Image (cartoon, rainbow, N blue to C red; front, side, top):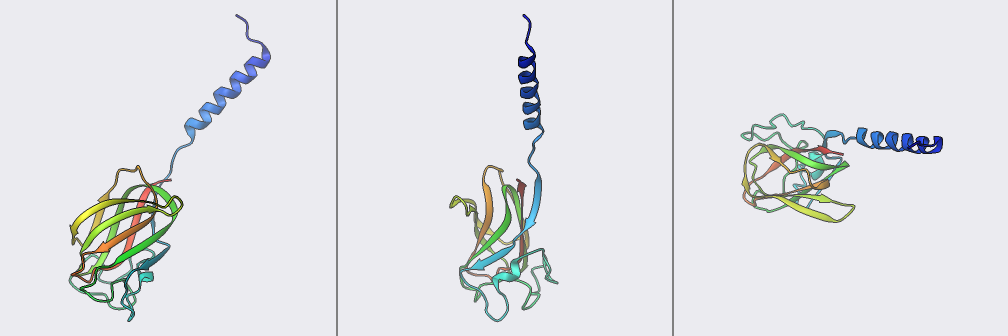
Amino acid sequence: MKIKNGSNFILLFFVIFILGLVSISAASICQYASSASATSQNLLGSLANYSVGAPNAPSVGQCSGWSGYGYTWSPSNWNVKANLTLNYTTPVYAQNLTIFGDYDVCWNRIFLANTQTNQKAQVFNGFQNSCIYTQQLNSSFLANQVIIETCGWAWSSTDAVQLCGET
């Protein structure tokens, strides 16, 4: 069977198109929050905005000494259950997140959210008091927001939250 020139062109175009699709791959990125808000914050100088960006608190990861005002977020008091909501520039299929605590941390629940679709997925429920905590995720949820909830009996001073995944 002989293929005509026009058919060869279509076949060649189809092969190039398929190869182009195969070569498109997702990029893995890790990012820190670009903005934040909270249901409670210490107005003396432990505002939600201090959890934006890379960790910068002098005592981050130690949890035995507080870095002081101007470095981390914490609720208005140690006995307040509060949510810290962190927003990320690039939505990712989340593979893991790392919370960088500064002092007296206890997280109760962690959620991923997608502000475009208004979907939310709970990824942790329990009590976690590691000063630097990494939560592995299954990469099935497209997220551009992380919400962490304090236990309600600790300061949970939080310096940063890194979200990693594929675009």
